[in-house]
Image 1: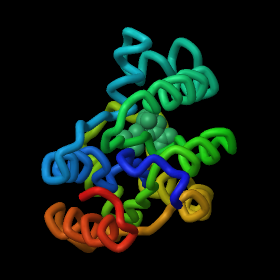
Image 2: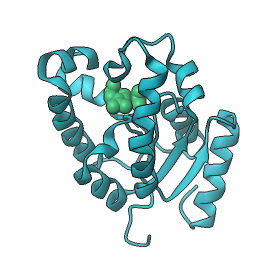
Image 3: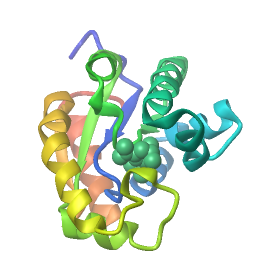
Image 4: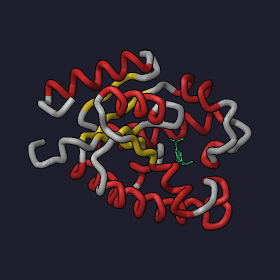
Length: 177
Ligand code: S3P
């Protein structure tokens, strides 16, 4: 823990787990900048995420995602990641080595409700979205657990409560709050 950057906090977790909204609130109260890797990917590629998937498929998107992740190490910030960033072993290593990793857990039903009106996520652009979310979660939950320093259940708690829980953990780990 002592070798880690004490100012960089990564939020990982499934689509709809609140990484961006909790990240923005956490950044505000802990006076850190906020970065959203998905937004940085769009800026880097000059096109939307669905367009990137269409042009270079998921594997091309993952290449860009890793490159953008590496660029984030220039910033001490609260960083919201994309739900699939933990798929690559390289990314998991980079996350663990370069900041505190908070797993925002949300049950599949919560993920389903929160993503139901969104068409900007190619991974769940299928007819049976609930089933797809279930399949993805089964594969990824162990990987989120592998990289996390601790977990907060954002399916059961409000944004405010999640931020408070993260702040308490930062104090416990003697990180800057
Ligand atoms: C993805 C999640 C998205 C985005 C891309 C792929 C995934 O981010 O990175 O659509 O594989 O789960 P959010 O988790 O912010 O929706």
